[in-house]
Amino acid sequence: MFVDLTDEQLVELSVSTEPDAFGEIVRRWERKIFALCFGMLGREDEARDAAQEAFINAYRSLPKFRGDAKVSSWLHRIAVNQCLTVKRRQKTRAEEYLGDEDEAEATTFVAAASGSPKHIAEKRERLRLVRQAVRALPVELREVIVMKEFEEMTFQEIADRLELPLSTVKSRLYTALKQLRSRLERLSVEVV
Amino acid sequence: MEVSDMAHDKGKMRHCEYTDSVLDFVYDELDASARSEFEEHLAGCDLCAEDVGAITASSFAVREWRQEEFEPLAPPRFVIPVAAAPKWSIAGLLGLFKQPVFAMSAAAVLLAIGIGTYFIVNLSTRPLQIDKAEVAPPASVEKPTAPAPTAGPLVAAVPKDEQPVAEAPEERTSNAVRSPKPLRTAPKVSRNSERPQISSHVVADNVDHDAAVPVSLAGEVPETQDRSLRLTDLFADESEDRGD
Ligand SMILES: [Zn+2]
Image 1 (tube, each protein chain N blue to C red):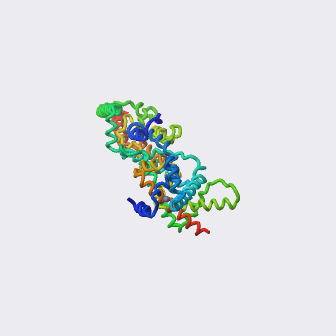
Image 2: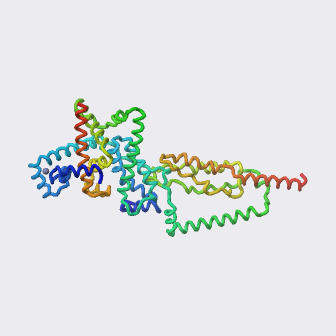
Image 3: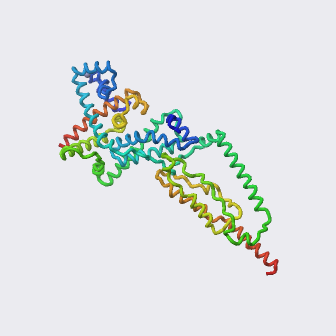
């Protein structure tokens, strides 16, 4: 029923006569928003909660949606803000419980066990370091890495979504990946 | 421009003129001619070779994380609970009335309210001539009209068969029937008080909200008690007239 409509048309419909049209928006975006939240937060349970909350927030603020805005950018901003809220809560909890955030994070490992125990342990450690290094990046850098690697967007698509010049997006991604490399090297040395 | 961007711009001064192509090369977003030109340059430029190595390694690390931990996850399925209904703006509501269907519906509702009010006023001003049989057994009295479920589930981001089940209507009816003071005319209860309040909280507490609805519906209406008192007085008068 709503398949042929653009995101913007669906939002317009949701606000006026067809609240169910928002269901199509959710179906179209749920995987991408979940990927974004997963990359930003690094944990499945938190990513699912954040994405769910993001859609609820989006639905609630439908009447405030600017007609000239892009739904993709609007949803993205809401989701990133939701991730930041989760991180703030997480930080408070970690402070309260004296930094057991890393312990909790370690339980998110879901990769299928294959190869020798040594190989599995190495991979597990490698993934933990990547999560930690990505999480330590500033939000605007983490965001572009996640969009590129998790959502598999082109530079131009990222620029459109973030409403930024293409050169700024490339510059951020370049900086993000270089910083990530330095952090990973440092963390690896610390571990070894 | 942000600090990180500026830092990078300063860094670019120390870098080679092809640095801007490094990302496009790693992510395969160069066209064929630009790619072969960069590859030719790469063969003789240590700075670009180092950049390509660092960026490829980072990209590979994040990709491995995605493949190992994200891709095996079950696809998400998000549901927007009823309690998350949007706060409609006044402008939005006014916009609705620009549409003929809504304008006509509103006119019909207003007309119905007007007619209803006319009858209520007429009944309450008419002298009461009630048989005992009509009043005594509660079972014979017509059921008060349950209000229309105007604030039912507004939307769910799932197919209709997966929407949360609203249990409120049954409760409303049963509570209304159980009301110990049956009404002869429709109670003058504020329409607003009959509507479930939509929560401003994000949590999916639609069940609680619906459960809270019948309380106001089943609540006592002061006018009912007044009317009963008057009827009692009336019967007392009739008994005296008949010399009982
Ligand atoms: Zn070079």
